[in-house]
Length: 163
Length: 387
Picture (cartoon, chains in turn cyan, purple):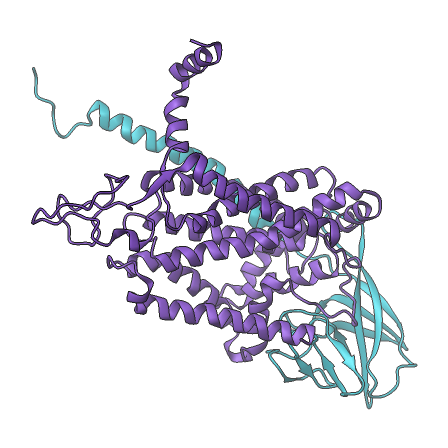
């Protein structure tokens, strides 16, 4: 019997490599679209729109006042989502805060007895200007991108800084 | 030969069902500790309860931000039996978390994770993590206030991973904020992704259990082995011939087995069944008497709702409160490190000693870890429920 050339693939080695190659092809052909599918929403840009908050001429000085504004929920649904807006006037300056805590994104509320914004989840505190002054929040209270036309406040469903 | 026996023979020739039944039913189970083994079967029964009730809940539930709450509210208002099914799903999940924890503590205490059962333990840790994953994802689905804020906080925790945090958060949420894709993804993870891993892993866990059998109690092994010098084993009713060395001095003859064993069927199955049926009755009563709550529909604009976590999140929630802002990633590191330590346990604690009182190096840190979680839970419940 002729001796096999060791430099050449045996039938067994060929089949072994072939099986692995088939597995690799299937993995790649399935893997690329699936991974792309999982990742694609991340690269989907949220639809940013302006919405009127309302007339803010009646908002008293140093008294955070809550408004609710409806925004499209985006993606495939036609439903809307209400977002909370705290309008704060300090002297002539107007600040437009969200109720999203920068710690774990719980709903922050204005506590008039404390004179502070309180997060009920883990006791985060913000002062009237939104500065994080107590508890675990690592950043100030987020502010909406906004503009004021006369006395009407408009906001975007986006924050001035990412949280 | 009877007709039934003939059918059985016919089937056996084609499927080897007889040897499978023998292996499954007539395993020798150590008598000592038999009641503790019921925790494992109770875990299985509760998981199967989850599977059955979960399948039926999908016949009504709609995983959509506009419909999820409404579909469950319909269930609550108009479907008494459906409400019981949902109640069973919730309460058996709660009790499952307790029982799987006890099952783990028992295994830890008795040192049953040691050679050759390391992979029984590793698959068990995997099952524990997956069951926790089911509890977490399941908590999102009702899309009431409790579910929504749980989803917000839980998906925000990975955001504190260094460098890639907000990427991981966006991956789960399907965007920067909790929304329609978050619910679709979480539903898919809850009903398909995790179960697709969970159930094969249960099969592996059980196959390994049958391969190695229960270790039994270390008390059973005192003097129950043969030494190299030829000292005879004390007479024992049943000897397992395939047990690895105990104590660990490896000799060819040194095979040990629990002294007293009984057949799995019907002796152990009776004990297992008794405990399981008790738990199922408790679950049923809780499902009928209390049921599954459904709060008001999710409202991101609320400034009056105080989110209260599910009880199994309490230790994590308390950690979120206690960890200062510079160290928030600790909230990720501690649970992840805990799971890694659990996975590594059988490879760290490799000595032959099974007596819990002779293993202080493992038992003391283990006891402290359990104490830590219990204290966090008590602190959290005290804070949230003014106990």
